Amino acid sequence: MARFRFPVGTNVMCNLGTKGWKLGKIIELNYREENWPSEKYAPYQVMLEEDHTLIYVPEDNQRFCKKATYRDLRIVRNIDTLKSFDNSHLIKKSASNENELNCSNEKSSKDIASFRKGKCQCCNECPENWTYAELYSEHYSCVARNGLKLTQFSVDLGKISVGEIVNFSSNEEIPTNEGFNQCPTLVRLPPGVNFFDDGSLTGVINFDPYREKEYRVEFVAVSTKEWNNNSIGIIRLEVSFNVVGNEPTKEFNIDQFTLEQVKARNYAEGITHNLKEIWNEWECGNVDNLETCKIMIKELDKLRKLLENHPRLDKGIWWSQLGGFHMNIHKLLENTLFECELYLGYALTFGDSEVRLIAEKNLEGCYQKRLLETARFMWIEGIKIMLDGKWIEAVEIFEQAASKKNGWGWAVNYGDIWISEAAARFVYSVEQIITNKLKHFDDKRWVGIIEKLLDKAQKRCQKSESFVPSGHPWALEIHQSLISFHSLKKNKRLINRWLDSFKSRTIYWCAQILGGAPPFPPKPKPRHENADDLIYNLRSINLHQYNL
Image (cartoon, rainbow, N blue to C red; front, side, top):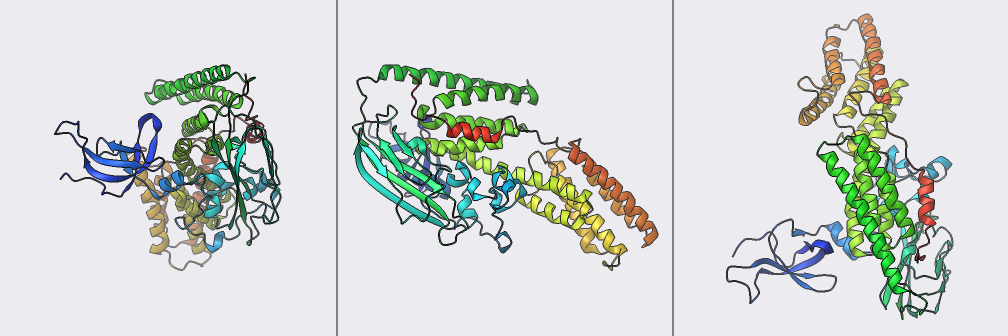
């Protein structure tokens, strides 16, 4: 028998083409069907988890079938990461991180990018400001990452017919009656049903043309108001019920509705086609970054406005597209990570398993972009601290920044963080020698650390084939300064003069960094859209306006 990658019983993700990736379990190897030619076989027969459909995998290839990861299983089996709460797979927070979350500072509580400070496991500092992605995404998991308690409340209202009243009030068991409008999954509610900040639902269920005759509602809302209360923490409220009798009224023109959806879909497809075309042109080198971003931003604005008018189009898949394409221009250094997270996170609220898989795949990359942004902005903060003469404090920040993504940052590609740390360590060590706090002039420990940092930066440059053959100019200058320093023969007068010169050059390089001058990355661009306006627009969407 041929050797296959996976044994019977393995959970796998199968590529079903236009239907996306589906979770299943291998139930047979070397599978054959009676009408196949004698030489034909399929490596695996798989039973899909969602409906027990039997399929076969045509080739034992990663393109068709891959082993399901821990996160794959959780994404498929849970409507959000809080549904089945688990923080065992995440890094435990250290004692130094114990009190990093903070909502008392008004600026921090409203800062959409406070994660750039490197605290709170790269989640924003104030839980009351957490987004859809931070609360619901498996890849962000901010509740679990920060070791917060989660309190779950769920209620099943049973079967309710269209035309009947839903009336749910949060009872005394729920220890808070505020904050539930932070990131509610409103798109899952039937038309006519309203949700309030105190956790209550009320209204008459109306016909919903986007859904089947009978459908299941699994509405989720989260309150973070008690995040700092160890006996309560984050509260997840889930209200479920089955809707029956979802049939159009005589007044509802289903043909016109269907036509509107087709028009909107065609327009969305045209926009995404344009986005792919310009991106392909950029990849081929036919258009520069500036023109690519200009065109893509214009097209993305069209898609956003379309979705604000047709928010429930195709179960939310276009929100995933909107967020995903913002990742492309973020790669070209547009300040759009917030848009990526906002729209991909919003796609999670639809509850559709296929949309969730697509959104989570992109959010996995978004969280890595958070780490890269954090590394860059911590590096910039360290540079500012160097200009204040706080050398050891800068070293500590550079160490933390480099640890986020192994020395990488958003557009920080050549070991710049390590080079900066080497410079700060050099100044600090020489100052220690001058003040007799460091006894050994040729102490191999501090010299060795600096040399190691410069070596890592040199290898990073070589790997990228940049600054060859000599390496990064600042790193080269620091290396030459090491040589000249050791020629001073412990003469403190000469050392002082040497240190003044080295500090002057260090300040020059720091100014180059802050000014975005080569060989360093350009200054971060300002945002195109006000983040508060984008949030407001999303929350103001009339989810049940059918535009007929």
